[in-house]
Amino acid sequence: MEQPGTSRLTEAVQELASQVVSALRSGDHLVAFRSASGPAGDEDLALAATRVLGADTMLPALLPGRTAAPDDLAGFEKAVVGFPPAPDAAPTTRWSHWAMTRTLTRLGGSAAGRAGEAEPDASWLDGAPWQQLTHQLAVLGALALPGSPCAVTRAAAERPVDVARGFVRAVRRRDWLQAAAAGRWLVLLDGVPDTLGLDTGLEFVGQMGGADARVRMHLEAARLLREGEPR
Image 1 (tube, rainbow, N blue to C red):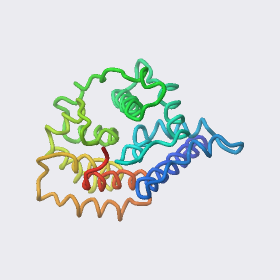
Image 2: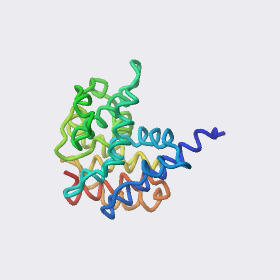
Image 3: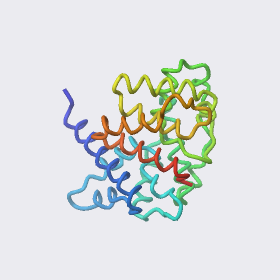
Image 4: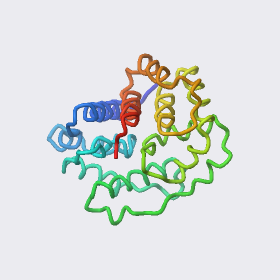
C-alpha cells in the first residue's frame, strides 16, 4: 500500500511533468516553484519532485529562443546544489545529478561554477545486457539531447539495435514510461532499424500510456527532437 508521503510525491511529480509538457507546447514558463513559495505551497515537495524529473524540469528553457524564468531557475538551482548524491549513490543517481548540474551551467545559474563537475563513471554500461541497457537509459532519459555528448550518450549511440529491442520489450510489457523514454533515445540515435516503425510505436505508447504525465513528457521531448529541438 502506497504511503501518504509517497502518494503526495507521486502527485507532485505528475503535476510538475504536466507543467513541463504544457511549457514545451506553449512556450510558457513553469509555475511549480512560484506556487510552492506561497503560504499554501510546499517547497520541499516541489524540490523533491524536481529531483525525480531531474534535468527535464528545465527542458522548456533549453528550446531555441526560450529563457528560464528567474523563479524556475532559482528553484532548480536549489534542488541541484542542496541535494548532492550520497557517496554510495547508484550510478543513475550520480548521472542524473550530473545532468542537472550541466543544465544549470547552460542556463547560467548563479551557482553554475560549483556545478561544473566531471562526468561520473559509465563503465557499468559496458557490455550490459540489452534489457538492462534500455532500463538504465530510460531512467536517464533527460540525457537524450542533441549536441550534448557524454559517456552515456556514446554508449547508447553504439547500440541502437539493442535499444530498439528494449523499446519493443517495454511496449510488450506495457511499461509505457520505459517505452517512452527508450523511444526518446531512439529518435536521437543513428542506425535504428527502419523495420521498428518508431513513429507508429511512439504514437501507440501515447495512446496507451498518455495518462502518465512523465510518458507525455518523454513523448513531447521525442517530438521536439524530431523537429530539431532543443538546442
